Length: 267
Image (cartoon, rainbow, N blue to C red):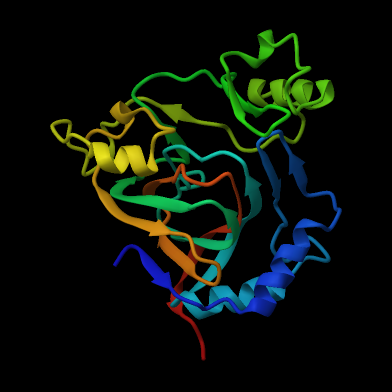
């Protein structure tokens, strides 16, 4: 199976250790209005719970692996349709590991059977400007901003001018040491299993994917809808398209993108 769920595999002690890391101040923090994240580098970043995370990964992965990216995140929003295939070196891609830690409201991840063999990309039939962004207001409600570059009055929003300026730089690709390119495509031609005649289920869309225009999901086939449960671990192929469900108000979890080494793990 491309998607596997390992139930109750993360102990309460391990969950506590991983959650405590969110409170630790260090130089791998990226704090935005809607998402707070930390990206420690395997075997390089100091003073983070790598040993705890390795215990978990070792218990769910069959092949020898290396962790390309480790992402601790807490989110007020829902990630849209994308694939975490890195820079597209298909010979080494292994598993995407998702570890739910805490959530308010129903949290879920929708994983599709469809695969993409190019570099990490966001998908959507309609072009969405990188400057379109959801920002929480003072009451925590997400407000859709058409173009953050044109945002003049932030008095009702939970964002500082410094954060807004930083976000504009990030979205412009001008921020020093910024992340890998934020690729977007509206061409599904190279998506494996895409069928332009398929219509996405309206009930599934209403329950899980209302943050994504339904036309962006037509032609795709759901592999599995995974309801988040603290203590579980979800794994799936890095080439698989997926998105977050839209039911939560806030959630905290860990994503690890792994590559494999072509030998069986030694006992």
